[in-house]
Length: 327
Image 1: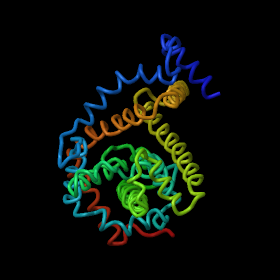
Image 2: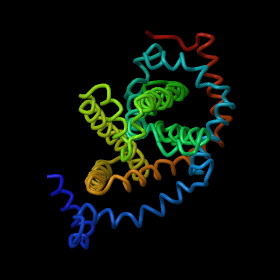
Image 3: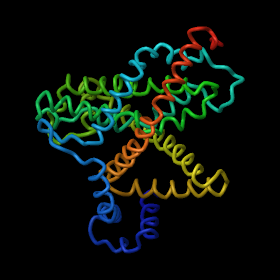
Image 4: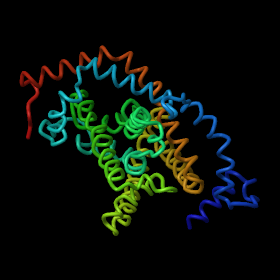
């Protein structure tokens, strides 16, 4: 059925591809998409050589922003960590507040949009070893940047639906996402790969390295990993379809027609994406993902004083007991 749908869609959208002589419809679609995707990817991920490895400037853009925001808010990701846990547990949840989901549900949705390729499949890059310690550090910065949504501006779409009167709570809850994505999952995966030495096996890459690492200790683990990757891929697809739908209806208005139109377009591109090689799909999605950070971080710089004022007022309300626990 998958091949039939792919062939039918390819024939409708790219009629000339139906006559491809080599590689089948999958390769034909890939060949048609590549000239469009490559210039976009090369622009977004324009890189400069640093310590034997290529360093994308977009990564520098995100890292500089992270440092500035961390200092400006006085390391709030550490100061508010305990409070973030309390919010996720529902300690401050008021059932009378307007909203659709809990803090935990918003956190789970945002995590489901990133956990997978960036964390399980892409936690280790053997090419970084060739660049020495500096090269490894740079690759680590790249993976830390690529493995979560910090600075991109997509997670707030999930958090905007939370039942709360205080918008600041969602910024505090969202602080947990990079910690879970990068510090916990990426680190655990990379440590297993390094300890087992599977990064030294030629021909392995991505989730293959992770699978081989765990298989060296548990012969049955590749089956578990396959299921995990499948579920994370599905949850990522659902999370980003929701993000896309909210963006679509913001532009074209809330209506059944707008809703159905977006879902139809989304389903068509799911089929196209499943019909072509993985490389162009990942490259294009990553490029679009991080292109959002350009406009988003500019907006964050502009709104820094406003956000700091809101955060300061919220922290004071919690300290003085104006905001109390409900659980």
